[in-house]
Length: 86
Image 1 (cartoon, rainbow, N blue to C red):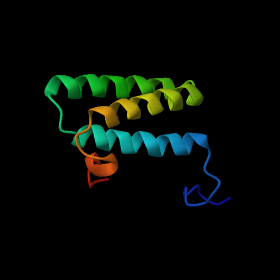
Image 2 (spheres, rainbow, N blue to C red; image 1 turned 120 degrees about the vertical axis):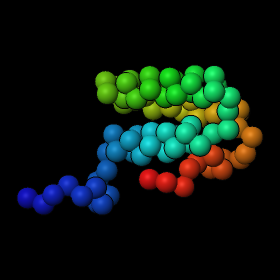
Image 3 (cartoon, rainbow, N blue to C red; image 1 turned 135 degrees about the horizontal axis):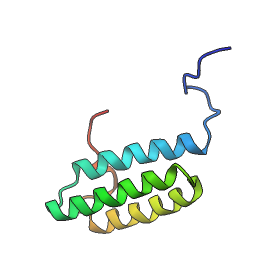
């Protein structure tokens, strides 16, 4: 049996959600916000990660809403707040 290298196109919804969560984490970390706003965003992100352990569909919906709120607060368009790191 081959090792799961995650390079095939058989990625499930959990893998897609994990990639999106990683990207949002980077975006929150690199965002230009006040410390209070960043703390609130971080807490909301952690809550979404916790929900993802139990209900992927609900977590995806919450993540979409979170991204919409980040876009509304962002001073740069789209991917401009994503850090250039792993």
